[in-house]
Image 1 (spheres, rainbow, N blue to C red):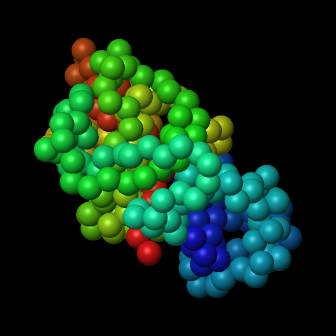
Image 2: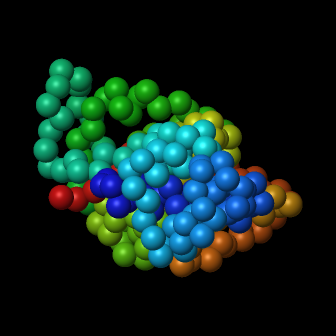
Length: 239
């Protein structure tokens, strides 16, 4: 994560607020003390903000850096490097998307590779399992391909490893005022998306504005937990 990434994350968060009708460009300009043209150029990627400008915009919206990072990014961790502290290490299996969706217990033959994660980083995660998933193996990971990562750029780079908590199948926000990133079953595919629920449909939202929102209708006997494979609780990006 660098300054340019942070700059883009803030712009996307402001644009989402405007799209939802919670904010307007003129109101943002007034609150942050900018000319409206300056803010318009920022929102339309025609102009960058200075560090002072970013601070003013964040303060005007009562945002902090933590608020615009929707998940715990370990952006420069190498998956082959052990965690150098006294915390015990757990080995998390990296599996195919189909195994992540369908295998309650991961057999050794399904393990593609492994990643080392500190035990506290895993077990400090709060669980909200559905009845079906309560006895499933909790933590596993998938490696994002180009298609999976493109919709969530820049949060998820190609080849990144996303650790899933399969004991979090609830749409209750994990952190207040922050979207939760889920792994969601969509036909034969596993999608990584922000998820809402409205009028019997799951609304799958990408991070990149270049990708469309997808609607996933639920049958009358189905619940969101039937499609939510788990919450993305960690991301390891390759060096």
